[in-house]
Length: 420
Image: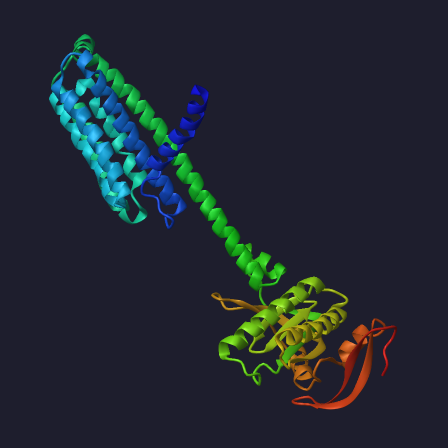
């Protein structure tokens, strides 16, 4: 039974200790602020426990009213700090645990003389404010630290009373030893929490960096994202062997859907398109309205750029059909592809985008605009690229705005050779 009682009490003590250390921590508290709060609570608990111990052993020692009063005050301060944290008054707790010890130690040094060494606690008081005050109160932390440092210097060098070592030990040897141990403990605790705060900050910075890099990779092609992250912003570059695809979803505007429902529909559809781009290793460039734009051969060159886009275009049509059936809507997809040279690069310095320019882009968009529902229409240049891998059917000459009559082809699917 005793063993069972001990087994259940240990977790209870750990839970109590954890609750005391985390007094003042809420769900919205940042990781760095959590470390500051735990640090302040630790100092309050250590100071309170030390003061309580001194009060308990005081009856067995020569009566020293200032020492007893100081320890009673130290215990009170520790409890007040914990109560302030529990009430959510973090700045007030930081002020109390920073200012009150300076006053108490200063008074003790004046009453007992600096030779007893109580002013050594002021060295701790000169460091603590920098660890417990929030960033917006850094000037208050600096002011309190300077006061502690100046008090230490003044009490050390301006005390006129000179006591021998024997007199010091005779008057308050026990308290001197307790003070030395307390200072050592406090310095160790400060060092430990300084490391934790620094490591927490470093971890936060690293997590933010990884999130930023992931975001950049989500909006830019991998090669461009890596160059941008490495601060190697390259100028717009010309690519000779590329293909560009435009796909337009027809039937969204005519459907009896609210604006919100239309956005939800396009979001679901384009999310499926994104997955298809990843499967075929091609680059989504952007989407605007009900139009989706993809490229291959840029920014990473590839020999089968046209074939990749044709295959992904065929899959986009199947995805659109599946979504239309699932939602009971009359949707179709017009896909147009053209191959040729273009210029690509990043636009802007904020909210930047990777975009493409050139006649190849314009012609691909015309292929889509003059295309056929649920079909992939390609130009003669793209047909030459996919000949032998995909079967195509000549659609004939189509009047393309801004280009005049152009021969175009509809992709039938995989096959040996192409039918003109």
